[in-house]
Length: 256
Image (tube, rainbow, N blue to C red; front, side, top):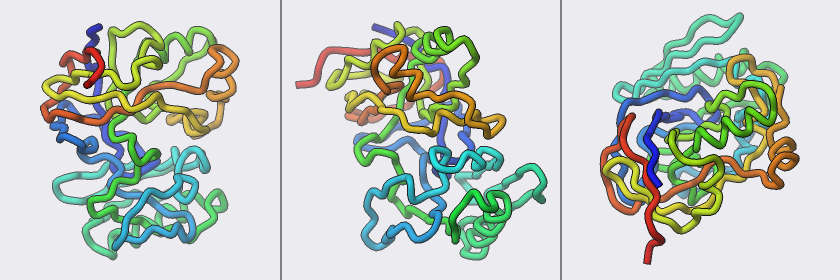
Protein backbone atom coordinates (compact mmCIF):
# COMPACT_ATOMS: atom_id res chain seq x y z
CA UNK A 1 0.00 0.00 0.00
CA UNK A 2 1.79 3.10 -1.25
CA UNK A 3 1.25 6.76 -0.51
CA UNK A 4 3.52 9.75 -0.73
CA UNK A 5 4.99 12.16 1.76
CA UNK A 6 3.06 15.42 1.47
CA UNK A 7 4.96 17.41 4.10
CA UNK A 8 7.53 17.12 6.89
CA UNK A 9 7.54 19.10 10.14
CA UNK A 10 9.79 19.55 13.14
CA UNK A 11 8.59 21.10 16.40
CA UNK A 12 11.80 22.42 17.97
CA UNK A 13 10.05 23.75 21.10
CA UNK A 14 7.44 21.38 22.50
CA UNK A 15 3.96 22.82 22.05
CA UNK A 16 5.02 25.70 19.81
CA UNK A 17 5.04 26.47 16.08
CA UNK A 18 5.63 23.59 13.64
CA UNK A 19 8.48 24.25 11.20
CA UNK A 20 8.21 22.78 7.73
CA UNK A 21 11.27 21.12 6.24
CA UNK A 22 11.76 19.87 2.67
CA UNK A 23 13.83 16.84 3.66
CA UNK A 24 15.37 15.12 6.67
CA UNK A 25 17.69 12.21 7.44
CA UNK A 26 16.22 9.64 9.81
CA UNK A 27 18.70 7.70 11.93
CA UNK A 28 18.04 4.14 13.08
CA UNK A 29 16.28 4.27 16.48
CA UNK A 30 16.44 8.06 16.16
CA UNK A 31 13.98 10.90 16.57
CA UNK A 32 12.89 13.30 13.86
CA UNK A 33 15.69 15.86 13.34
CA UNK A 34 15.12 19.07 15.26
CA UNK A 35 11.97 17.80 16.97
CA UNK A 36 11.06 18.55 20.63
CA UNK A 37 14.56 19.74 21.49
CA UNK A 38 13.26 22.24 24.06
CA UNK A 39 10.31 22.49 26.43
CA UNK A 40 9.01 25.26 28.66
CA UNK A 41 8.20 24.03 32.14
CA UNK A 42 5.19 25.61 33.80
CA UNK A 43 6.36 25.54 37.38
CA UNK A 44 8.91 22.97 38.60
CA UNK A 45 8.68 19.90 36.33
CA UNK A 46 11.17 17.60 38.02
CA UNK A 47 13.27 17.35 34.86
CA UNK A 48 16.88 16.45 35.72
CA UNK A 49 19.30 17.24 32.85
CA UNK A 50 21.85 14.92 34.45
CA UNK A 51 19.38 12.02 34.33
CA UNK A 52 16.86 12.98 31.65
CA UNK A 53 13.67 10.96 31.61
CA UNK A 54 10.19 11.19 30.15
CA UNK A 55 7.94 13.68 31.93
CA UNK A 56 4.22 14.20 31.40
CA UNK A 57 3.37 17.04 29.03
CA UNK A 58 1.09 18.44 31.74
CA UNK A 59 4.25 19.91 33.32
CA UNK A 60 4.91 22.06 30.26
CA UNK A 61 3.33 24.96 28.36
CA UNK A 62 1.51 22.88 25.76
CA UNK A 63 -1.75 23.33 23.88
CA UNK A 64 -3.45 20.50 25.75
CA UNK A 65 -3.22 22.64 28.88
CA UNK A 66 -2.84 26.24 27.66
CA UNK A 67 -4.60 27.18 24.42
CA UNK A 68 -2.97 30.62 24.50
CA UNK A 69 0.35 29.00 23.55
CA UNK A 70 -0.92 29.16 19.94
CA UNK A 71 -0.73 32.97 20.10
CA UNK A 72 3.08 32.68 20.15
CA UNK A 73 4.71 32.21 16.74
CA UNK A 74 8.21 30.81 16.99
CA UNK A 75 10.94 30.08 14.48
CA UNK A 76 14.09 28.32 15.66
CA UNK A 77 17.24 28.23 13.54
CA UNK A 78 18.71 24.76 14.05
CA UNK A 79 22.14 25.85 12.82
CA UNK A 80 22.61 29.01 14.89
CA UNK A 81 20.34 28.34 17.87
CA UNK A 82 18.63 31.69 17.40
CA UNK A 83 14.91 31.90 18.15
CA UNK A 84 12.59 34.57 16.80
CA UNK A 85 9.15 34.89 18.37
CA UNK A 86 6.11 37.10 17.96
CA UNK A 87 2.64 37.37 19.49
CA UNK A 88 -0.26 39.84 19.36
CA UNK A 89 0.36 42.79 21.63
CA UNK A 90 3.97 41.82 22.35
CA UNK A 91 7.26 43.12 21.01
CA UNK A 92 9.04 40.69 18.72
CA UNK A 93 11.81 38.68 20.36
CA UNK A 94 15.14 37.50 19.02
CA UNK A 95 17.12 35.32 21.43
CA UNK A 96 20.13 33.00 21.25
CA UNK A 97 19.01 29.84 23.03
CA UNK A 98 22.60 28.65 23.27
CA UNK A 99 23.09 31.32 25.94
CA UNK A 100 21.46 31.36 29.38
CA UNK A 101 20.50 35.01 28.82
CA UNK A 102 18.63 34.08 25.65
CA UNK A 103 16.72 31.27 27.36
CA UNK A 104 15.81 33.58 30.23
CA UNK A 105 14.68 36.26 27.78
CA UNK A 106 12.33 33.84 26.00
CA UNK A 107 10.85 32.66 29.30
CA UNK A 108 10.25 36.25 30.38
CA UNK A 109 8.70 37.14 27.01
CA UNK A 110 6.42 34.10 27.15
CA UNK A 111 5.41 34.87 30.74
CA UNK A 112 4.09 38.22 29.55
CA UNK A 113 2.33 36.66 26.54
CA UNK A 114 0.57 33.89 28.50
CA UNK A 115 -0.25 35.95 31.59
CA UNK A 116 -2.59 34.19 34.00
CA UNK A 117 -3.08 31.25 31.61
CA UNK A 118 0.21 29.82 32.91
CA UNK A 119 0.96 28.82 36.48
CA UNK A 120 4.64 29.71 36.31
CA UNK A 121 7.36 30.34 36.84
CA UNK A 122 8.29 29.51 33.27
CA UNK A 123 11.71 28.11 32.36
CA UNK A 124 13.04 26.90 29.02
CA UNK A 125 14.58 23.44 29.33
CA UNK A 126 17.33 22.18 27.04
CA UNK A 127 17.04 18.46 26.41
CA UNK A 128 20.77 18.34 25.51
CA UNK A 129 20.14 15.16 23.53
CA UNK A 130 16.92 14.21 25.33
CA UNK A 131 13.68 14.75 23.39
CA UNK A 132 10.53 16.00 25.08
CA UNK A 133 8.20 13.54 23.36
CA UNK A 134 4.58 12.89 24.34
CA UNK A 135 5.35 9.17 24.46
CA UNK A 136 8.86 7.91 25.35
CA UNK A 137 8.70 5.29 22.57
CA UNK A 138 6.84 7.43 20.04
CA UNK A 139 9.96 8.42 18.17
CA UNK A 140 8.46 9.77 14.93
CA UNK A 141 4.80 10.62 14.30
CA UNK A 142 3.00 10.03 11.01
CA UNK A 143 -0.40 11.45 10.02
CA UNK A 144 -2.67 10.03 7.32
CA UNK A 145 -4.27 13.04 5.63
CA UNK A 146 -7.17 10.92 4.33
CA UNK A 147 -8.13 10.15 7.94
CA UNK A 148 -8.14 13.86 8.76
CA UNK A 149 -10.31 14.59 5.72
CA UNK A 150 -12.76 11.84 6.67
CA UNK A 151 -13.02 13.30 10.17
CA UNK A 152 -13.42 16.76 8.65
CA UNK A 153 -16.27 15.56 6.41
CA UNK A 154 -18.16 13.97 9.30
CA UNK A 155 -17.59 17.02 11.47
CA UNK A 156 -18.78 19.40 8.77
CA UNK A 157 -16.03 21.98 9.27
CA UNK A 158 -12.38 22.39 8.24
CA UNK A 159 -9.72 20.63 10.31
CA UNK A 160 -6.16 21.87 9.92
CA UNK A 161 -3.80 18.84 9.93
CA UNK A 162 -1.32 20.95 11.91
CA UNK A 163 -3.60 20.52 14.93
CA UNK A 164 -2.16 17.00 15.22
CA UNK A 165 1.49 18.14 15.36
CA UNK A 166 2.89 15.23 13.33
CA UNK A 167 6.34 14.93 11.76
CA UNK A 168 5.33 13.19 8.53
CA UNK A 169 2.09 13.91 6.63
CA UNK A 170 1.08 11.26 4.09
CA UNK A 171 -1.27 11.33 1.10
CA UNK A 172 -2.61 8.28 -0.72
CA UNK A 173 -3.54 5.84 2.05
CA UNK A 174 -7.19 4.92 2.68
CA UNK A 175 -8.70 6.67 5.68
CA UNK A 176 -7.96 5.02 9.05
CA UNK A 177 -6.08 2.04 7.59
CA UNK A 178 -3.10 3.00 9.76
CA UNK A 179 -4.95 2.09 12.98
CA UNK A 180 -4.50 -1.62 12.26
CA UNK A 181 -0.82 -1.64 11.28
CA UNK A 182 0.98 -1.94 14.61
CA UNK A 183 4.11 -4.03 14.08
CA UNK A 184 4.14 -3.54 10.33
CA UNK A 185 7.12 -2.23 8.42
CA UNK A 186 6.83 1.16 6.76
CA UNK A 187 9.13 2.62 4.10
CA UNK A 188 9.49 6.41 4.33
CA UNK A 189 11.62 7.51 1.42
CA UNK A 190 14.96 5.73 1.87
CA UNK A 191 14.31 4.94 5.54
CA UNK A 192 12.47 2.00 7.06
CA UNK A 193 10.45 2.09 10.26
CA UNK A 194 8.29 -0.15 12.41
CA UNK A 195 4.84 1.03 13.39
CA UNK A 196 4.89 1.21 17.18
CA UNK A 197 1.28 2.18 17.96
CA UNK A 198 -1.62 4.41 16.92
CA UNK A 199 -1.65 7.80 18.63
CA UNK A 200 -4.33 8.28 21.27
CA UNK A 201 -5.32 11.92 21.16
CA UNK A 202 -5.51 14.40 24.02
CA UNK A 203 -6.95 17.92 24.18
CA UNK A 204 -4.18 19.55 22.10
CA UNK A 205 -5.93 19.19 18.71
CA UNK A 206 -9.00 20.92 20.17
CA UNK A 207 -7.08 24.19 19.69
CA UNK A 208 -7.17 25.99 16.36
CA UNK A 209 -3.48 26.79 15.70
CA UNK A 210 -4.47 29.99 13.87
CA UNK A 211 -6.84 31.47 16.47
CA UNK A 212 -5.82 29.80 19.77
CA UNK A 213 -9.48 28.93 20.41
CA UNK A 214 -10.72 25.53 21.57
CA UNK A 215 -13.32 25.15 18.85
CA UNK A 216 -13.45 21.35 18.24
CA UNK A 217 -13.78 18.70 20.93
CA UNK A 218 -11.61 16.32 18.93
CA UNK A 219 -11.53 13.33 21.29
CA UNK A 220 -15.28 13.51 21.92
CA UNK A 221 -16.01 13.68 18.20
CA UNK A 222 -13.57 10.86 17.37
CA UNK A 223 -15.33 8.66 19.90
CA UNK A 224 -18.74 9.70 18.59
CA UNK A 225 -17.91 9.07 14.93
CA UNK A 226 -15.57 6.06 15.15
CA UNK A 227 -15.61 4.65 18.67
CA UNK A 228 -11.91 5.38 19.21
CA UNK A 229 -9.61 8.28 20.13
CA UNK A 230 -6.93 7.58 17.51
CA UNK A 231 -5.43 9.78 14.81
CA UNK A 232 -1.94 9.12 13.47
CA UNK A 233 0.73 6.56 14.29
CA UNK A 234 4.05 6.48 16.09
CA UNK A 235 6.90 4.75 14.28
CA UNK A 236 10.43 3.72 15.23
CA UNK A 237 13.16 3.95 12.59
CA UNK A 238 14.79 0.58 11.89
CA UNK A 239 17.00 1.49 8.91
CA UNK A 240 18.39 4.98 8.26
CA UNK A 241 17.70 7.06 5.19
CA UNK A 242 16.68 10.37 3.70
CA UNK A 243 13.03 11.37 3.50
CA UNK A 244 11.67 14.25 1.44
CA UNK A 245 8.42 15.68 0.18
CA UNK A 246 7.10 13.52 -2.65
CA UNK A 247 8.88 10.34 -1.51
CA UNK A 248 6.97 7.09 -1.23
CA UNK A 249 5.35 6.09 2.07
CA UNK A 250 4.64 2.39 1.81
CA UNK A 251 3.49 -0.32 4.22
CA UNK A 252 5.14 -3.75 4.04
CA UNK A 253 4.80 -7.09 5.79
CA UNK A 254 5.34 -7.52 9.55
CA UNK A 255 8.88 -7.49 10.85
CA UNK A 256 10.29 -10.82 12.07
